[in-house]
Length: 378
Image (cartoon, rainbow, N blue to C red; front, side, top):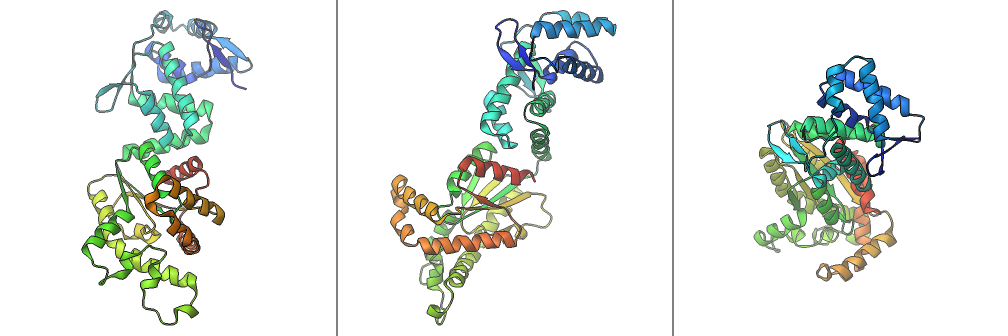
């Protein structure tokens, strides 16, 4: 059970956040260790209470300061806080900017916090900083308050994930996120949402790379390049095709086409590494071996995942839905080739498992995004 703090002015409820109390004590001149111990002591005193008012909490803090004879801190803490018009955040480079709730929410989502929880945590933190009269704060202090809030509200796992993401952000290492998947697996929509949440400007689809290559290399020279990945096997000269396993034929055709695209994919990733810029590369041709072709001296964080729709009927519905929303994608052709697409997806999933890379079921978009972000933090 969490103790609810009732604001004495407007009677609004909020959970007890020791991080805000620690910050207020630090502003009053108390050392960090003493502030941490006092806040922990107050938390223990109210742990068995359903609710406590902000006035009661303030009296408890003042009584503790008086008991410990911290008169200077007591005088400064006694001054009533004045809610600021805005809270200024100072970065490590001393740049100053107003606290942005939207930016804070996106950062929490990047660390793996679900959207509804991210909004709630940010609102709690912001409202209590205002109530405590905090006018400015360093990015490091804001990160610590956020960590404590996550620890109190969502538990140690969420708090550790936040620390891991913050460490990655400070590392200045580029993130190369590779998303593979067959037609209808939702690569494009997932990529768009991930780019927003992870604040990644560059995205690249292998479909676009293939289109560029098609304009350069004529069909007569490389027919395998000018067809869909699930149909590439039809262009490969193989004797006795009718006697061969269709699964192996589809896999062979796909490999031939993917190998041609690998040159362009490697160039895209190499440039991202050189420019130290994060990127999402998505497409059916983003097979696991691409990760192993990165420059050996690169310190980039490379993450490969494979999206999959695990039910054939569900995949059929996805393809039919694409036709309703985006007619240019020729859903009828995809539905006609559903069996080949399904076989290709089975091959992609088996390759992912063989290379020990995550297979993410995309039957729930939000859950899939959450799992991919989790794979990035690992």
